[in-house]
Length: 218
Length: 214
Image (cartoon, rainbow over all chains, first blue to last red; front, side, top):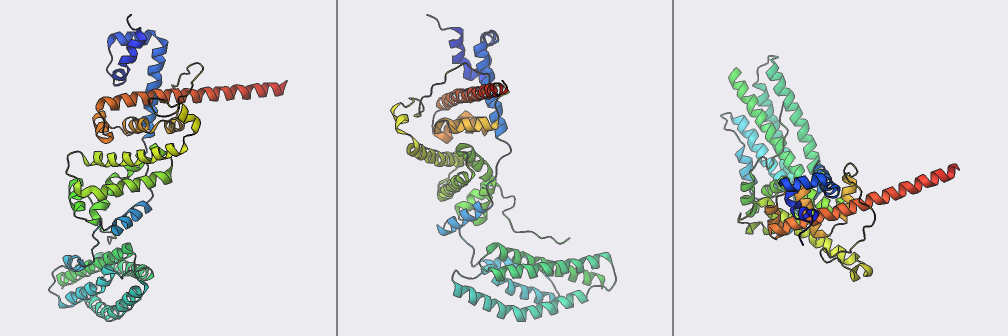
C-alpha cells in the first residue's frame, strides 16, 4: 500500500523547512489543512526562536573577576610581578632636559610600588605602605621641583595651548590623588594600582609635552 | 583633553590571544573571555532559564576552556571548541538535575526517544501562529529533554549550522537534523497544550462571569 500524501509530506518536512520546496509537496500543503497548519506552526516556532536570540544577554562583570581569581589560584595565569621595570621604562621619552629626566626617574621609582603591590598578609601590607611612604616623600619633593622647573619654562603668555596644558596638569594631579587614595585603601586592588600607573604615565607625558613646548617657545 | 584610559587587551586578534593564552598571558585570557562570554552565557541562559545558574555554568565552561587551552591545535574553530565544552557542561548539569528530580511515576513510563515521560496531548490541534511569544516558547523549551534542548537552542536560537552542531555535540549531521525535527515537533505539542489550558481557563472564567450575572 502506498503512503498517504500526508505521510509522504512528513518525510519531506525537514527539507521543506530548509526552504527546499518540492512542487508536488507544495501542492499538497496548499490543499491539506493539517499539513498546512503543521508548516505554519513550525514556522512560527522558528520565527519566535530567532527573536529570542536578541538582545544577547551579558553576564555580570563580577564573573570575570571570579574567573580570573580561580585561574590565578590554579596557576593558569602568569601574574606579572617582576617585569614592571620594562613597563615603566617603555614609556619614558628621550629628553635632553636634566630636570625633566629627574622627574621621570622620580616617577619611575614611585610607581614601582603601585605596580608591584604588597603581598597577601597583613604584615606585608603594612610594610608595603610604610615603605611606599618612606620612598615617596623625598621623591615627591624632587617631583614637585621638577614640575615647577618644567612649568616655569612655559611662556608667560595667556595662549590657549598653555592654559589647556596647565588645566590638564591640574586634572591629572587630582586624578593621581584619587588613585593614590584608592591604592592606600586597598593595596591588593590590582585595578586601582593599574589606574595609578596610568595616572603617573599621563603626568609624565604631559610634563614632556610642556617641556618641549617651553623649548620651542624659547 | 587628557586621556584617562586603562591598559586593555585592546583589539588583539583571536588567534594571537589564543597563542598568548597558551603561554599563560593574563590579558589574552581576558580578551578571549571578552570575545565569547556573551554568546556562551546566552547559550547557558537559554538552556537553564536561570541567570545565577547560567553564570555558574559560564564560569565552569571558561574554566575548562582555559585549563585545556594548551591542547588547542586549531583543528576546529575556537568558537566551536568552546561551545562544545559549554554544551557538555550544561548537559551534564541538566542530566544530573533531571535524574535527581525524576519521580517514580515518570521512571516507570519513559519516553523511548527522549528518556522523559510520554505525555498525553488530547484535544483538537490549535493553530500556533500569532499565539506564541518568547515567554511561551521559553517555558516550552524548559520542558524539552536536554539533548533536544541543546540542538534547538544551538540551531534555531543561536544560528549554528548542522555541521557545526555535529562537531559541538559530537554526533552526525543526520543525527543533528533528526534531533532538531523531534525537538520542534515536541515544542509544537507543548505549545498547543499551553494554548488548550489557556482556552479552558478562559471558558471557566467566562462561565463564572455569566453565572454571576444571572
